[in-house]
Image (cartoon, rainbow, N blue to C red):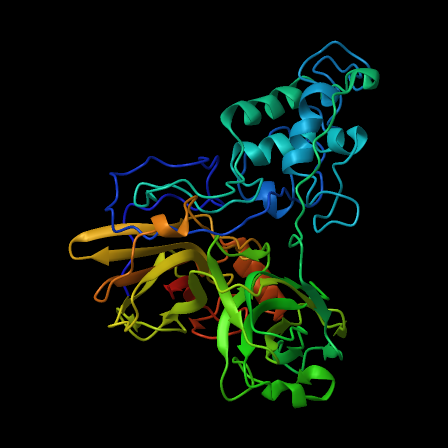
Length: 503
């Protein structure tokens, strides 16, 4: 196996990780634009008193450390309480609350997916140090598609969640100034937080039965399939869909298939236990997926996924028992939005990498124990397509917990164009990334083009995610990691949305 050269220090090893890297030379016009709708969110865990700047990259995100100037998040440098009414700026009511409500409250709300709320001054002031530290090093809001020395996407990404430099400085100044509240009587109107739900769904359907997950000896990963009846009485074209996990503590990832023959309708309560890694039926078409951190899948204007009348939707659910307790999922659901009008392009998703289409550059796939900066790479040659036009509308990188960096690129002749790089890989925040462009402006994919997928791994105790994965298995020393579905196995897989023009 070969090792990458000239790579930046991983964020969890760096004293202060850069927010973005230097742009390289302009890419080829053969680039594949991407398009996917992404929500905006912030995150973290627990505030850590007495840690003034959270500059250790690993602690600021793994444990939410990075407290305020004196540990409580709301006291001024002179020890006085500056949390009440004050003329100091920036303050909460005029400056910080509008920013937090727009970029953080979609997750950090009562009942949201984040572990604490930022909906009021007292809550936010407690976390002021951690907020300032995590946005400064680029961990929050979560966004992992970065421009680097070796990846300069040709267009801006749609729905880029990153804060601007002025916004980052405002949060730093608010924290260093003692996190003042300002006069609530002068509070400015707050923006409505962006929704994380699929807009205007045509149907939302819940699973019909239940699945119980518990470790069986050393086995912690299980695959069960769920069948949903979307209820469409005519052929429709789906332009939005969302997986709603019923028990996030055990859902590792989900693959979404269309079962056109409705074979899965025969499953008792719509559940097929131990169905393996596919759809559990003879023929099905992959149309999407869900991984931790995913937002609703929304296709570009003019693109739709075909859903015939009477067809079923099948979820291949990868459940992972993270502890020894018995867990139940009886609430996983599906939301879909469709139209009966045929779109200009019909979409589907392809998996390229390992396991997927393509060939390893240096087989077999194996990551030695204690290896750092270990690389596995693959390539896929686009065959003769037999269709008038094909364009790419989205790309998602996927690894497990040993991964630290992934790059997906396209070559045509001597031109190499980076489609997506995620150099601060975090298993808990995976998304589809897309360029802000119309489908008609996205370059065409031609036979002979080559997709390259490169994954870098750190299989040492210096990688906090490896420590966590080992602990789940009762282990404390790294193991040789092979290709597979489990959290202590690995993948190097790009999910690519393709659109085929039909008229």
